[in-house]
Image 1 (cartoon, one colour):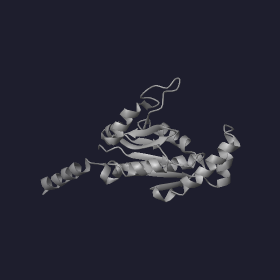
Image 2 (image 1 turned 30 degrees about the vertical axis):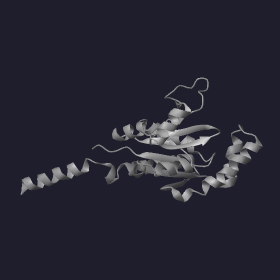
Image 3 (image 1 turned 30 degrees about the horizontal axis):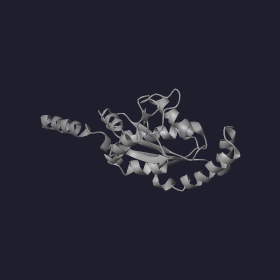
Image 4 (image 1 turned 90 degrees about the vertical axis):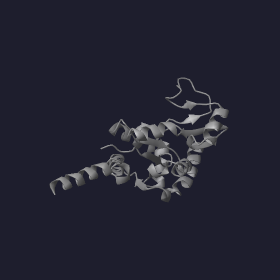
Length: 212
């Protein structure tokens, strides 16, 4: 039976494993589409419109946002970023899920949008702050100053954990990935996401009537 696609919001502080879990989820089910963000910044070398980002002028982005065509958007260092609504609605009609890698503010906007009833939100917590710090340092990509900034931001992000439908503590990546898959499987089976059930049950009633 057909079902409506869901909107999966995945959030976490930097270093908690969100990006790796997102890749695991899409490896498990390649039909899950990753929401390609729109932005007003200029393309970087090698970036393609519609694949890495949807590139817009400031005026066209504002027009889309004011017209309700962005599920969420924010201004970062003078440029706008947002999640276009139309591709998500198309995926929903096709029974495909859309994955959003957004922070708590973006997640809040999506939950408050016209498609908010289709949202399933998951927050990923680290097993400890010491472990979170170790993971960030283990990347060997950032200076001590940058890591300190990420850790300070993490405290603010973690304070919003209770706003999410599900919260997973990422002690073991394999187990957390399996828990995430279990959530998706269960949410796909919700009665409200299976519009064909009404007709199916009606057919069952018709079979009862024929047997009478």
